[in-house]
Length: 98
View 1 (cartoon, rainbow, N blue to C red):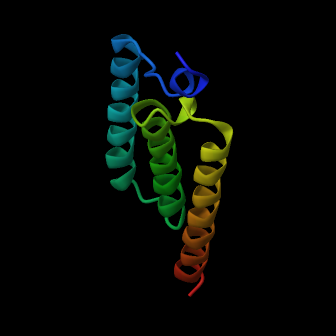
View 2 (view 1 turned 30 degrees about the horizontal axis):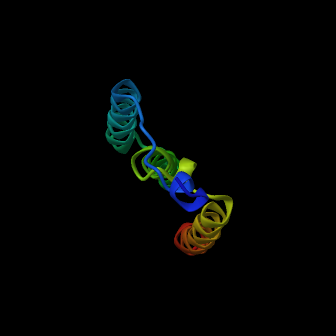
């Protein structure tokens, strides 16, 4: 087996980890729905975005196997995430203080 093949062989994730991540995503979704019924004022957007960010990180790392990718690919994903956070933050500040 060549080095290239060794780098790209499939990573096996135990079913138990998938189930735990799924339960975590389900719990975070329930938390989002529960917080939607509570009047948090301007904080409702921040809490919803934080919960959504945690959920997306779980999905990207586990289901999309991002944690097994090489460092450069993860760096590109991080740059995309930081860009997204900047746009969301600017949108939030426009919405919150307008």
